[in-house]
Amino acid sequence: DAKTTQPNSMESNEEEPVHLPCNHSTISGTDYIHWYRQLPSQGPEYVIHGLTSNVNNRMASLAIAEDRKSSTLILHRATLRDAAVYYCILIRTNAGKSTFGDGTTLTVKP
Amino acid sequence: DAGVIQSPRHEVTEMGQEVTLRCKPISGHDYLFWYRQTMMRGLELLIYFNNNVPIDDSGMPEDRFSAKMPNASFSTLKIQPSEPRDSAVYFCASSQNRGGTGELFFGEGSRLTVL
Image (cartoon, rainbow over all chains, first blue to last red):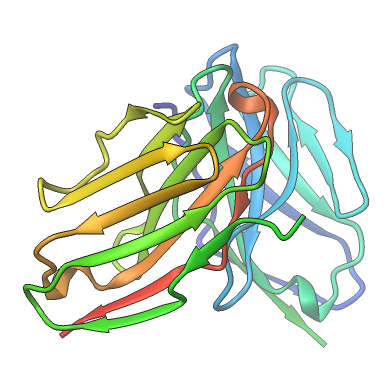
């Protein structure tokens, strides 16, 4: 399975943008890039996913490098409720299997 | 929809006892996943099903673990006999659409403590 690499932790100030990076240099052409976040004592929650083009939804934006070997999750205005562990994972089309890495723990300071 | 429903939310048992964790996926979802989360190993995929058929159980730690999906609306993860090292939070997730196009929906997890 293709693996992802993320920084262990990041800090942000409230109401400022946050850019969370993810490296996936061994990504294959049929791998989708998914982002999830996990709040304390909860199950992971879907944030966004994409294949090649940048994606936007109400929660965040996903910027995918042209060679697809890296991506960045963008939270446009961080709030205290965004403090969580953020996971970047790859899911292969028609395979279903996904492997979670250690994720990035985001701390948001008031 | 109520989302993915897991039971029990908490289970405390003694070593050697049988443990059964249950999951009801979201209606219409054709994939079901069982994950285990610990501080040491993070989130591990144990097994997943597609249309009720186990596709990949390579993450199941050993023969003490078994999972079934008798129908599209129910799955179980059984540990027999349980050991203290099985203590973890077990998550069930489901998804629609094929492969990586669909988002994973997770349940709230079942926290297992084996004494």
